[in-house]
Amino acid sequence: MRRIPLQKEQIGSFYHVTSKEAIWPVLHSFPSFFAVNNADWATFQVVNKRFAEAACDEAFPGASIWIHDYNLWLVPGMIRALRPDVKISLFHHTPFPSSDVFSILPWREEILESLLCCDAVGFHTPRYAENFARAASNLLAVEKGPKVPVAPHFLPCGSALAQPDATPWLEFRGRRVKLISTPVGTTPERIQELSSSPNVQRLIEQIESGTKQGRRLILSASRVDYTKGNHELLLAFERLLERRRDLHGEVVLALACVAANSGMKVYEDTQRSIEEVVGRINGRFSRIDWVPIRLTTQRIPYEEMVAWFAAADVCWITPLRDGLNLVAKEYAAARKGKGGTLVLSEFTGASVVMKGAVLTNTYSHRRMDEAIETALAMPQAQQLDRMASMVRAVETLSVDFWAEEQLQAIQPDHPILCC
Image 1 (cartoon, helix red, strand yellow):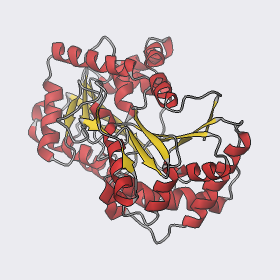
Image 2 (cartoon, rainbow, N blue to C red):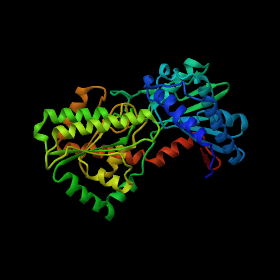
Image 3 (cartoon, helix red, strand yellow):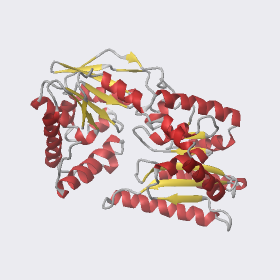
Image 4 (cartoon, one colour):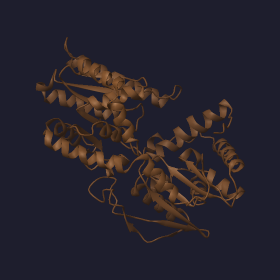
């Protein structure tokens, strides 16, 4: 591990402003949140150059360098100019938007030209890879390889991010760049080991005797971010309580919504809105012996989070857009051999591999309402079948599978240097 010291002003400009205020909204297809006026592209370039130079200093001749995420978009091109001997791969952890949305970025050609200096570019899903291929072919003179069917673990049709086929490679300025789609995985065996540990079992007992008290527990876990759909989830829960008086006192929603870094107004506004809606719903429906929503914006220790997964009857994940969403996979891993229902936004990358989930359109009140009703009414036998399907997917598409498939694309002869 090598630290790369940056000045406080560089961090604020590079991460909080250019990355989060200018690039993040575009990647997640929220162009109305795009704010370019404060962006300092020159600082973004300088910080990327620092990473590139550090990687080149560490890399042996012919080494393989694995770069992670959009914050380091310019690093591949800089490394290629300094070290033509190395192999380069970048994995994109966020969504990659459609070509017309990506083109909003004023630095679009510079970004694409850098990414096309890689030997391989990785994405969670074939749709994101195809969006990248389309953007490159629309904006640059690239040659596209003939499309091939997606791997069988991906959903080929029937939902928002389904994709039947994808472009396997692009060629640009004499370099062939592989496009590799592998969803990031988790460590299911570790989650299952934790679930049965004495500490987590004690935590589960506390949840059962405290929050649940014989009720059905609906769990949602995310961050305070306008992309995460927390507002939409809360409004759907409010509509559920309006329709179903029989559920009053019988269900409880636990919303773990980790607060964002301070000093970012858009996230402060989002958190304020979440807290106001939770307060209104609890004010409308609470009884002396029942509060319908339990909200925390504090980070929960992982062992405790596993206990909540193991105790939850329903996991409700409703981002408006999400690169993958590991919470959905962690929930399935913690429920191995048990029932439980996963309600999952079809705008998450995980939706195309979690084939036992109840998929929902988070932009539609009707679809959101139908999904949570379906989850609460699902028979135990059907829960077990669906959960078994999702556990198989999680165990197959583990974090080890992800790393191996991505790294095989650059066929390393030396240990991988990660940025």
